[in-house]
Every structure is written in C-alpha cells, then in structure tokens.
Amino acid sequence: MSKKYFYIFTLILFPLFFLTSCMTTTTAAGNVGADRKQVMLISEEEMNQSAVEAYAEVLAEAKKAGTLNKDPATLQRVQKIAKKLIAQTTAFRSDAVNWDWQVNVITEDTINAWCMPGGKIVVYTGIIDSLKLTDGELAAVMGHEISHALKEHSRERASQEALQSLGVSAAAAVLGIKETGTQLLGLAAQFTLGLPFSRKHETEADHIGTELMARAGYDPHEAVTIWQKMEEVSGTSVPEIMSTHPSHASRIKDLQVIAETVYPLYLEATKQTK
Ligand SMILES: [Zn+2]
Image 1 (cartoon, rainbow, N blue to C red):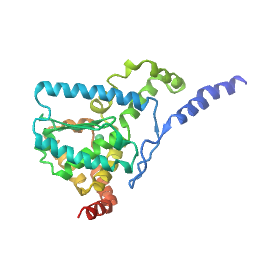
Image 2 (cartoon, rainbow, N blue to C red):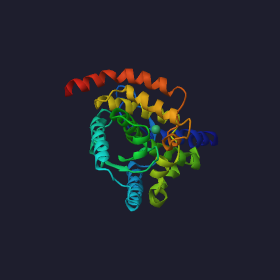
Image 3 (cartoon, helix red, strand yellow):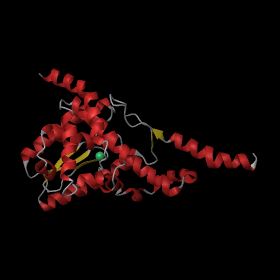
Image 4 (cartoon, helix red, strand yellow):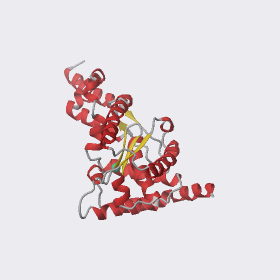
C-alpha cells in the first residue's frame, strides 16, 4: 500500500467506517418521523447504570431533607399520568415498557422536571404549583422528558463529547472507555441535568413527547400552552427547566404543527376510552 492510500485509509476511511458502525436508531419514526440516526460510542448499559446511581443520590438527598413524596395526592397524580405515557412508548421502541421506570415527586419551588436515562423521573412541585399545570400540561412536560430518555439524548451527547475530546481519527480508542467504568460515573447526571440539550434534541423531544401524550389521551394542543406559559414566566426569572431545555423562536409554531399532526391519535385514544 502506498503512503497516500495508507493515509486515506487511516484518516478518512477507517474513522468513517468506525463511525458508521456506531450509528444506531434508538426509536422508531412514530407519526412524527423521529427515526434519526445517532452515533453512540458509550453503551446503553453504562449510561443507565450511571443514571441509577445519580438517581439514588437525588432521592437520598430529598429523603434526608424531608421533601420526597410528601404529598400522596400529588404523587399519585404524577404517577398516574406517567403510567399512561409509559404505556404508549411502544410506538417508538419496544423495550421501554419493560424499563425499571421510577417516578418521584420532590417538594421544592424549582420549576423543573427531568427523566434520566432508563426512565428515572423526578417532578418538582414548583412546576406544578407555580404554573398551575393541568393534567394535559403535566403530560406534555413529562412526555417531553421521557422522550429525551427514549431517544437517549444524554448518551448521544456523552458520545459526541467523547468523540470531540479524542478527535475523529483516534475515535477507535474510545472503545477503551469500557474498561474505565469509573469515568462514567456522573455522566447521566451531567448530560441530563447539567448541560443544555441542543436545539435538535429539544425539537425531537417536543415531537415524540407530543405524540406520546396524544396517544395517552391528552389533547396535544396543551403541549403548546405549557411551553407558552413557560416562556411567559421566563420574562421575570428563568425557570430551572429552561436552562437545560432552551427554547427557540420557532418552537411554538413547530409545536402547533405537531399538535395538528398527532391530533387524530388523540381523537382515536379518547374514542376508545369513552
Ligand atoms: Zn428538553
């Protein structure tokens, strides 16, 4: 092999081949077309294990502070909505209904909710109370958060980070990450709670989440109103949830289109329950 071809192989073809082999589709398209291919270098198992540990820490802290599941009625309300949404995840991936889903409520003024990889949910009472959420709006928020987990956005972002720090031509070395499991500690928390999701990920979570809520029997138009409410309150002080879920000018318009797209699913779902 001449030097030139050697370089073409090592610098272009091999990394390209390597990245292609790491391409995966975490979810089916659904009615909203959410089957984008993603590059995943970090394994799902490692990411989920990291989430299990981070989630346990959050719950332990809340328990210590006496803020964990203080109000049984709110907990029941949140869990009931979550259950309905989780049942609909089969539209996007077949394994998710069997995840070890956990849903907890923390009494704190913060306007926030999140779902860590593998289905570990926390809803803060601040978002329910200060925005006076209806069940449909709560379903929209949780549907959005669940969608980040279904699409494994945290794992994708952690993978992107690993790729960037190592450089594309050295990407093969990433495989070595497997042996240094301790480095992965905190990954789930960092990429779910700490850093803002990209615009692409936000749009995807909006789309999947709105379809989930419609399939679960909640009017998808409430996905529009909740994010409108959120933008209104950010005029005074930015809610915690907006710092990790940045909104953009075209978001409301996009949500309106998606709400119309999935509206027939809502009609179908409510017809069945009547
Ligand atoms: Zn988001």
